[in-house]
Amino acid sequence: MNNVLTPAKMDIVHNVLSHCFRPKSAPSLSVGPSKSTLYLRIPGVPFFIDGKDSKKVLLTTSQVRFWLNQNPMLANVHPVRETRTSTFCSIYLDIWDSKSGQKAHEILAHNSVLMNGITTRVQPAEIR
Image (cartoon, rainbow, N blue to C red; front, side):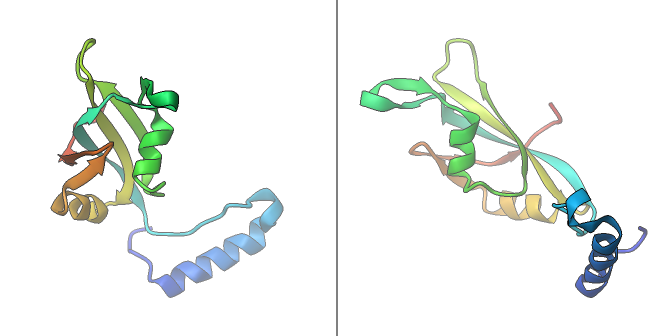
């Protein structure tokens, strides 16, 4: 579509598509504004976290998603170790956003995030 739909018009489109496809063939049908994927980076996050019995374990994608409150904008999460021997990593986030990048701009405006006891900054990232 060439124009951004109003919420009322999105409801009309959703109702028409729901009627055409029925819930059995499209159970998770959603209608919303067009989206783009944008890329952010959170550097300086500890790569090892406390596991059972205070043993250190590798940081997992599910742990990062938990810290970020299971945000539905997250398309992919990639913890990448800074170097082979580093105890820190950067977390690369692929987020779904509007074409204008409104959500990414909001995140970057409030660019501090607490992850595993460390406060770090969110930065724009290149496509990886």
